[in-house]
Image (tube, rainbow, N blue to C red; front, top):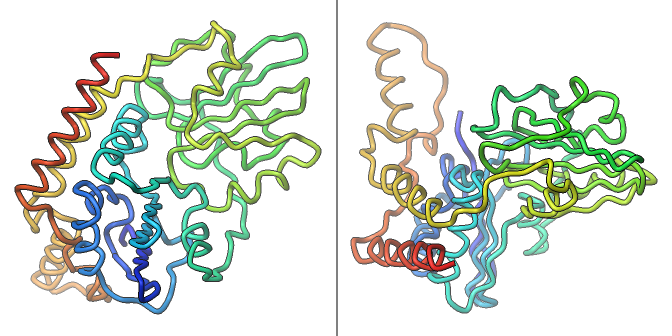
Length: 327
């Protein structure tokens, strides 16, 4: 149980690896006030000599104080596109002079930055292809352009990318697809297949360890393009019959701020570590056996922003909202 993360700090003395048991899906907690707070957050984590492999690592962070580089992945708030784009704009304000990137290669990309060798994901995922109940919730969008120019769309349950299936995906998609579709919200990931040109384009917001490396091998003979989180590439290729709401960084910044405030300033009893401790206490009180719980699993997630640092984050959100409204 946990949302594990590998965290790396690079300074003039070299690099050091730290481990967090609960930070894997909440990386913004460390980043929302700039380099000083992020450094404090990292140094509060447990030192480690070993990397947590990608199948078990939900997030990661690398902060290079020398080259002014920030590289991270693993943030549940940033699976929604409005919040994702808004938070990247906020980080650009709070991290002046830094190069900020999402680690689409997950843990392997962070390890490679410091020259560490870790096993790559050697077991391609085979996600279930199930039609999403509706598109007002998170979903994965697969679209196909046929030789006659016809476009079909399949909104699927979100999770791993359908691109893992390779060209066999064309024969595995549920039903005949939709020839016209108005999405309720922007997808969290997508795949576009052009059968005529034998081209596949893939974009994601959630971790898909190994996908970037595996993509050309999964689609032999095809041109495989990785679009990072650029959903616009997919919609542009679909034409006017497959549409989605416009990007809204105003609402994205507002929603992200509310969720972060609730998460960061929650009582320890309500945090994942606190709930696990409480569960263990209840099992003991009932005379039931409890599983072995590591010390790191009941440690609080990390340093919190000071009132001044939180105020800086709120001002950055306000600037992004103002720019979004002006646009």
